[in-house]
Image 1 (cartoon, rainbow, N blue to C red):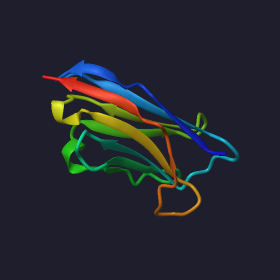
Image 2: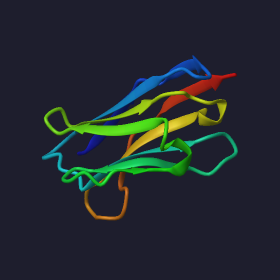
Image 3: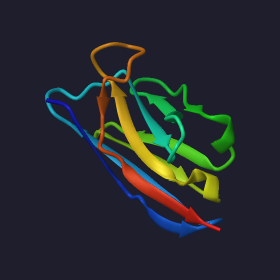
Length: 119
């Protein structure tokens, strides 16, 4: 069974940096796409970044394009989200997700890691 485990969340001041990681395991782990989502209290979940397992067509939501980057390590079955110049508006629970059984549907999710940015 596929399992996604996030790490790297924490509390930082505005302007600081964090690096989130997500390790996938279970079966022959070969996702089509992996991504990072976030959900702040009282807000809808939004996609932050996505990266295909094969290829380099990276997606970043406009609000983070100049500050965040996403990368993958296929040997370690890991994706990472480097978050720089964090803002209080980035405070949220961050989730790793994978499109595994169907392209276009994130059908496996991690439990999330909290990111809190104070002003």
